[in-house]
Image (cartoon, rainbow, N blue to C red; front, side):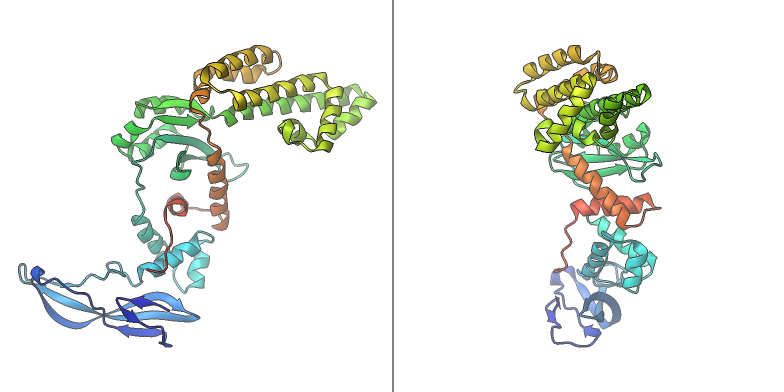
Length: 390
């Protein structure tokens, strides 16, 4: 069942256990044992459906040097805590997939007690060790759909782990969080991958002196997809306004085929490819834009070195400018950062998985009024291995 300091209670059926915690005190510390009368009630992991409370006879000592009296430290209980470490870890494990109120109710605790356990466990993990951080990913995520409220997600690209959250997208807020990592950590960062929506480049240049800024290829692909989809919508509207029956039928079905146009052609099913051919025949514009979209994707997938990739990108920009005016303008403005992909091949694909997990944590917690509470749970999800065997 369980064991603490060599005291086995696998055959105990009672819900309250009385034990004397025995820990050897080195003679050279010159402590004088005074009594065993300082009892401490400590909540531990349940045994089946029975609540377990340890009645620990904690020893008191007098120091020969300063003459002060003190209680011995217990390695399985925190200072001034009424629960074992593993009990707190069990509560936090439940919190990852639930919310404070539910966990408190299910375990006969108050919300304050649950939050206290969360903070205790966090102290063992935070701040996170960032000595190996070399490639940093910065991204934005909206946890509440449609409200326009974004938080900033900081990710170690090499380990694939979340390393920080910022409650606002303001540059000074992000700077404050990153500066807490220390100058040595910031100076060791070699690359920072960002999107093209936030004003992060100037921030990186300011506080990460040795980092190269790159733009993730998937963010570039996203703006191309958005412009292609807008063209699809415009073409559909044009067909409806002209009342051309044949084209109207095609573009009526086009409403539900955004996925077919945007998905990589090589991943389409046979039926989807047939549908794509019908769309191409109906709209020469969509046919050209779709071809350019595929060419752009292949460029990033097949370029073997930076020189080939950069030349290919310049050639694509020239061909695409009449059709992707907005995207071309953005790519030219961020050309250096985008071209950096061909040398380092850095992507933030791992960030998408992290963002999805963050949304799941929030959904399981029925939303978070306290950002700090959400941040702790999120970081513990990636950096704390719950081990109830201790």
